[in-house]
Image (cartoon, rainbow, N blue to C red; front, top):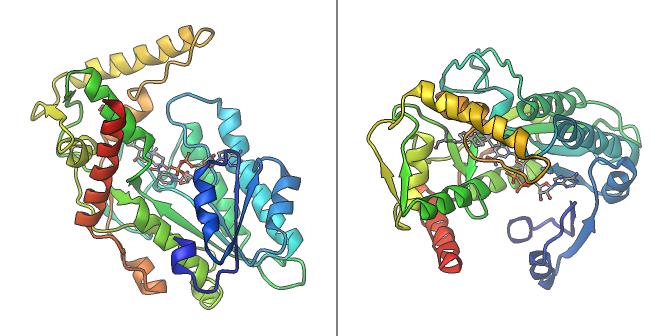
Length: 342
Ligand SMILES: NC(=O)C1=CN([C@@H]2O[C@H](COP(=O)(O)OP(=O)(O)OC[C@H]3O[C@@H](n4cnc5c(N)ncnc54)[C@H](O)[C@@H]3O)[C@@H](O)[C@H]2O)C=CC1
Ligand SMILES: C[C@@H](CO)CCC[C@@H](C)[C@H]1CC[C@H]2[C@@H]3[C@H](O)CC4=CC(=O)CC[C@]4(C)[C@H]3CC[C@]12C
């Protein structure tokens, strides 16, 4: 999107632990695209990649709420990695830093308190125990506190944090997991979450555009945007996590069984806890990381939706992809997967 939408772009550096062949397709245009294989936990690698950059969009992160990696690793990547990016900007003189934070910095909290149509100023007790939200909250705090620090050359660093709600769209691994789970169950998924529990979702293309826009506007609106947080939002409907997924999985042949949860909540809690035990027992042999665990069950069962226009007011954000376009693009992606699954 930067290559398509940013006329000022002279070089795009992509720094990632895992570089994919798709990067080669980006190198066909007039803008220099530099792919750098590196680890954000390694300060020297980050500094080398950042040196000379005008703006850094820091979106690298370990998105693990399934127990696939240790809390220490999550912290190392999400917190220390962010610290390394900030220090690289300061040491090399990069003045503008955009950070991909998360709704999880706010909630749902460990008390299961709903956040209903909230915005960036809505009072809410952001209390976390899980390593992932804790790491995102710490990283965001580092980014916002770094706003105003002097970088090499003596000018101030300008930082901003974007908080996507549940991202969906092409490449969404969790959607892929739900789809394959449904295929294994004969084209059916079984409702576990009440339809009344709404979860905010945002299309990946709109999240990407908000990052591009902030990267462009941060210099000209530093006084207004510096040190600010913005929820990433669009016109995707408010639905339960499962019902929202069915917007894409339904047209691809899956059916959600039940108009209300088929199992009592206490049994879901028991099954989630059993999954944790199984994960622990099986760890020496294999990685067992199902979708259902105590954290994901609690998340899915707690309403969290945002309603805000702060990004529009501060830097003119309007989602380029409508709900219909976002839905169509995601369905096409699942169908392409379906083709590969058959
Ligand atoms: N998926 C979601 O619903 C949401 C994601 N986010 C945030 O968006 C950002 C991107 O996440 P996703 O696209 O969902 O996940 P993703 O796993 O597709 O992207 C994360 C990227 O970071 C890279 N990475 C991981 N560890 C690294 C390391 N040590 N050094 C360098 N690169 C590393 C991965 O290779 C990957 O390309 C993350 O910061 C995440 O916290 C925020 C809100 C919602
Ligand atoms: C109990 C299951 C029965 O179907 C349903 C399990 C759904 C969960 C896997 C998801 C429910 C809410 C999701 C999280 C939410 O969208 C916020 C997130 C923000 C991020 O920064 C990363 C992803 C996530 C934690 C997301 C992960 C999957 C859920 C827990």
